[in-house]
Length: 220
Length: 233
Image 1 (cartoon, chains in turn blue, orange):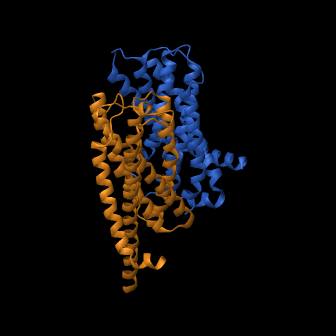
Image 2: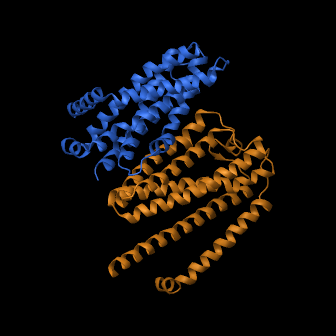
Image 3: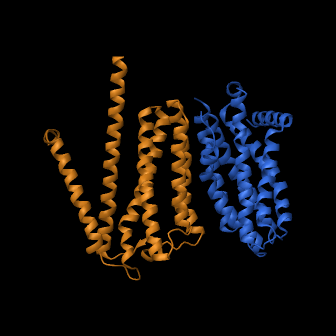
């Protein structure tokens, strides 16, 4: 099982290194969003609470722009049937999820320091911010990957991916924003406030539901 | 006895409908004239006799839809998928009633129709999720694919519902008035208020079940007629 996941994951990775389609899209998209946000704020002073919301808007919309690619490319290249022949649904889902997590983690590593530099402020509680971003990363990736699998089977896709995944990912965003607000404003905030517990619980719910339901999407 | 029910089925059904009409009319009148006001709450709090049952029916409808979605994935019967969609349609209707009555109350009590109170956020996200369900349905042409994918989405969405109802309002401070009436899940209502409230809850649930039953019968009939048409061709 683990070996299967690793091989499938490596396959996606090699494919990605050849075309660099997802990486280019997500990085440029996030830089564009960051520019739009940073430019429209300009030099006017805004509170750290607003900054937390802006950071999460940049993260969520960049993630939304990148996740749908992972299953769509199999349908477009007509390799989905081959994939069905060589592997079980669960390893396929887990390898795709792993890829999306890696993609979003890379994005966070670039975009968060850039964001902090662009707005020139100081994070008071760095461990809390990192923990909430990591848990948010897992939640966004699980929800995004299962909806991406759904969308790949639909005939008229359009903006469907954002429409379907946004309400499911909104709790991650809401809780993530308030955790980031804490991290930006209070130096003595606890490492595990109720936001972190809720985020963890939501990740578990989303991951379990996605894993159980993926079989029904994949096998028709 | 069984024979009696069978012979008088239509008469009994009619009696049931007339009873429901009278009962719900009585509930509406009682909500305004019979029930006393809770301490510290004003005249506009009477909206609770309609707002809370609507919210309860919304969740019930989404639960029924999740159940039929599960049945579809198990049995692959398109009828189950149609039932799930019908339950979601009614659920969205009641969800709108809940949102609008809540917003009206918020205007009277808090001074603004909308201010992203956690309760308002959660009901709004519910609306978004189930509106997305219908946009997913309209995007898929193949019947079996549509049924399968929307069943999966319905179940995925329902897994997040408890989070909205139970967790978000407890993390964030809400001004929603259930602490005034319903303190630590012990109902502190006057006996007369409780009578009206429970009758309203029961009456609107029966109204919903009746509406859902009509929808189910329409779906069954149209499936039957389609079958006949296919045979004739």
